[in-house]
Length: 514
Ligand SMILES: *Cc1c(COP(=O)(O)O)cnc(C)c1O
Image (cartoon, rainbow, N blue to C red):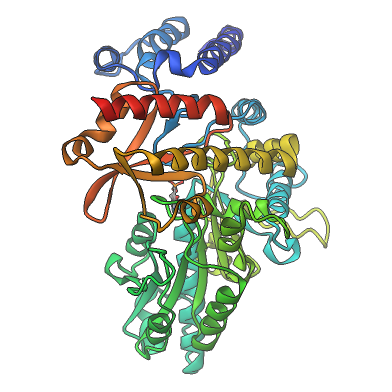
């Protein structure tokens, strides 16, 4: 480990960034996935055992660049990678992330005399609440996480603390905090037999969160409407919701799907419905959580007189009435993995600290700058102790592109999705899902995801494989109503409506003729 290695590492860093960005400028030329040959070669090249004598920096660098890098994909680099919901990395975010690695701050304890890292994190959260049109005074309690899954765990953990505490207090028990006494004791004190999470088409990570938190995956319950009056598969059955909330043996959290991962659609239809859900949650002592990993950013499209995006802005309306909100930054905000955020309407010093407090470690106590310093130590309000300074790329992106930059980006993504949906709707070989009564309805409800299948059963079984086999674009295969389907999820900052529409039309047109 020689200091001279640093010079080489820096030069190398510069070179590789340049090379990668050159590749990124022509992503459809080289394909978004490594070939089977490149993968096998990269795999074979990996060191089997730990050497006694290290290879040294130069040889390791060559190994990484020549052997490992060819085995990586261009999912974030290519604007035509439409799998999962994959954000890229903007120049501002890439720059900031390199600063993060170089300065390697540990954002664990608020130490204002040592670093402004926690100030940046707090300010970045404030800018995010501005972007999402949430009142800073109310919503700046939160933290950066590793992603929406971690944020959903935090949301259900805070909800569990809140609903069980209230139930135990109502029975006059001194044992009220799950964080302090554990789930079993508080559950007994509250006289309840379980906690349930009520949702429509929740992301799988909510099931994971329920599993991790001792709520149980089986207690994530659907409250989907069967009537489908609204032709919306995420529609909430409001009577079923109230019946479940009224159960005397259960404490509940309601989880709103604000942007469903297969369809991009929304569970709620506007402020009135959110007000009614809020009223029911207050009446029955339930916690209201919003999973808005990518969908919550629909709030930046708000324009009182524009009908173009009204289905999306309506779907995001009233989220300020929730108790907690999950969001991802590595999707729409296009910062590097891994980065998500958790926002909460209840002061961290009360609720999140009761769940996540790191007890009795005197060496980790913070030093407040002034009496009015309200910045909490991240280790007391989130999962980790030592943490990466992942707020800096978010801060850099928000400062660099501003409200208008992100609004423009989301509009381009949605317009491309609608161009694709429009073309597929008329194509004899394909059906866009969920099926719409009219094209106008379909386009109105399309956000930045297009779900579709091939009408021919044989083609449909192979559809994602054939599309991805072209290496011009990548889609995720999924299952919709028991049959295979494909998703095109547009989330990259380099989206270009005309260019990308031509690529998608070309590939899907050819695949339909195979
Ligand atoms: C992507 C996604 C998640 C999980 O996010 P990760 O960042 O992968 O942890 C949760 N909820 C929704 C709605 C999502 O789209």
